[in-house]
Image 1: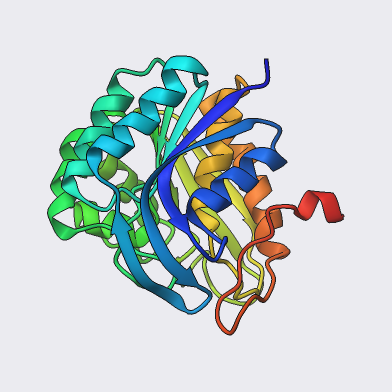
Image 2: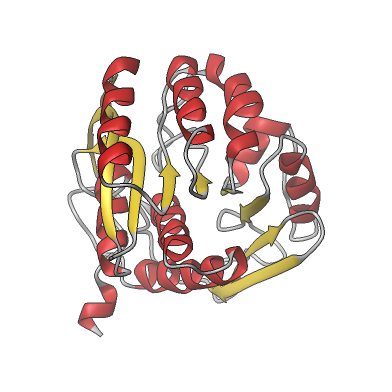
Length: 269
């Protein structure tokens, strides 16, 4: 049977991030994608004009409908918006026998808040402890732990701080890093994957392309897809890094603002 992956996230009406990016990524990587929509956003290349979270009962019903009938080989979470949704999804993940990739989405690519400040404690106490892999970017690391990453050397300190909340692995995304490894103009984009013991440094060329909407969603969904196919966490992370790097390189203009990464880049090369 084709591997099945479930995304629990918000809808991006512009198609660049959220549920839409997740399902495109899953299709490109050869798994069957399914969705639980947690929120609906009015969103385009310029930003988020509005967001409406769904009731907890609707989220639970979608999740149970899929998992109880079709089953899942991996689950990925994205925008959860409120403490109530975070805690409900954490409970659902805890009762599901499948790896969980938690992307603790805090803000959109344009800086629009997608997680209530009151939900941060629920992410720390309830969601991260049930994560197989947590995939925060540097802004989300700072939100959750207070650790600010200013150089490649700080990535290890950030990882330790996130691991204290209980995920089995953490992938600290260094895409926003400036300075040592993040210097604009031909340097590398560096991520650190670790379980507190083994360390895997994932490096890829940094492309001078502003059209990067959906990068975080795409990476987390690609990682979940790899886990669903039976890859180990390091193998799945390496595959996800390769896929998202190609998608960033092929990112394209859409609308008047920041365009999306290209989820179908492999089909056009």
